[in-house]
Amino acid sequence: MPSSDHLSRETTASEEVESWFGFSLRSLFLIAAGILLFGLYVGVLLFGENSLEVLNGLEREKRQLSTERLRLQRENQKLQKQYFELLQITGG
View (tube, rainbow, N blue to C red):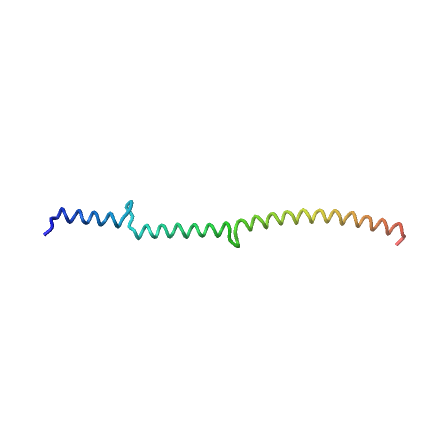
């Protein structure tokens, strides 16, 4: 019959195999899975279809379109001025 000291050493060795830094292997697996899923979530946020990168691109395009709109409005004003001057010259 094994001594109680021998049994306690086996239990301690078994506990060491089943734990790491005080966490059970199941807990470590769940923590690793959680970290992996969080990383995937952040990756989708940054680079996915509805990502920060897409949002920044759309904001940049909005600024460009706004600038072009202002340029076209100024060009339209000049052309209207020329048109009305020509109407006055021709008496139309």
